Image (cartoon, rainbow, N blue to C red; front, side, top):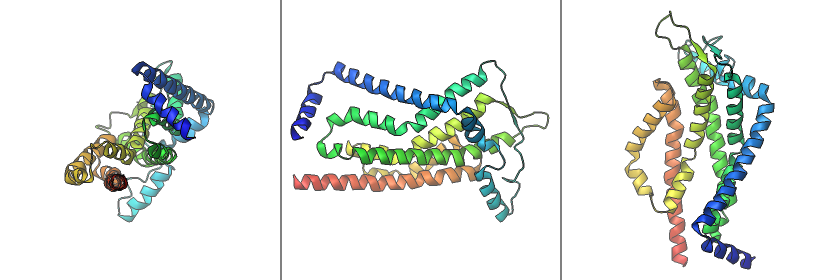
Length: 279
């Protein structure tokens, strides 16, 4: 076993730049094949993907609307989220719009479902350059990164997407203008909400690696906490409609992730200090 590890390390150190590019190319090819395969499965289950998932936040009986309706009634503002139907319709104005939406939504589903495998392939690419102790954390890293991503996806789907659809779908500048949105525009709102939230929830993982390579410390994160709060609020304003309540709802979990990232950064430095003391 030790011999194999030494051989792998020796192989990694002897690989040229072109060899690394070739290795990366095969990892990307395997990721592409996996995404396409999962996308084909999603393509087959068109009814479930669109009627249940994509168009779910458009229905008045969506769980988020029911929950927010109860909360709105409790504070005396039942008009905010209590409704029987959202006042807009979806339309497809080009011949290929529905087919294109089907294709790209299936690919997006393949990326979301296949995220753990995508992370696994990239980890296999970078792991030969790591120490044995760091390589042993691969399984934990993949699990944590996947859990954070899927948590972000669920948050984006059940919180950000319905908040955006409810606000934008009911907003009007005049009673003379009807809200009839293109299918692609609607799907773009759902897709952006889900993917952006999934990536934002990877913040602790990003801070972990930035701390490992020495670009970030807990002191830096604490020093710029106030600036970070402003940036979080700006980010919340970008990915949500211009509604203060919606922005606060989105900002809270991001701020919690930021505080967790400070703890993770401190833990990484403590572990490095203990390893250096032992050495």
